[in-house]
Image (spheres, rainbow, N blue to C red):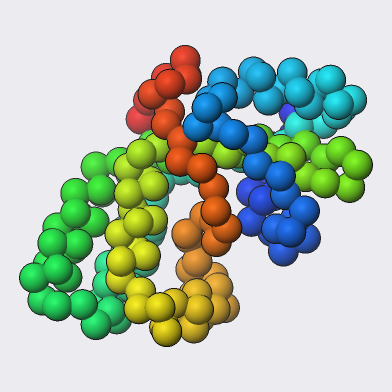
Length: 165
């Protein structure tokens, strides 16, 4: 089997409707996913690792400044976002994928703190403005929320992988 380092495939427009997600909450061991890929006859598995950058926090803070949240809630979110700068340089998401029978199969696992960041960003958006902001951020190239579809929560702690800065 060949490993190909790629960009996140599940986020691409070509795969968003055809992606099938692995239950990484109940089966967080990536080796099970690789075994399934091998059993399905996959000869190539793509790998993507997202590094947490200062730009992610800056984009979230810019989003916060555009929000219409109350001052106290805005301040609370700003403090938490700034605390997340401590994770800069760490890997916050890993995606493995393979194609079989015109479908993309995806193993996606994220750190708890990256999931928290996405929840904080969701709190900033008013439902009526969410879609407009998403399209605006996508056009600017600053969309960093990694999934717009439902994805089970994952936890790195249940894998045997160690992440170091």
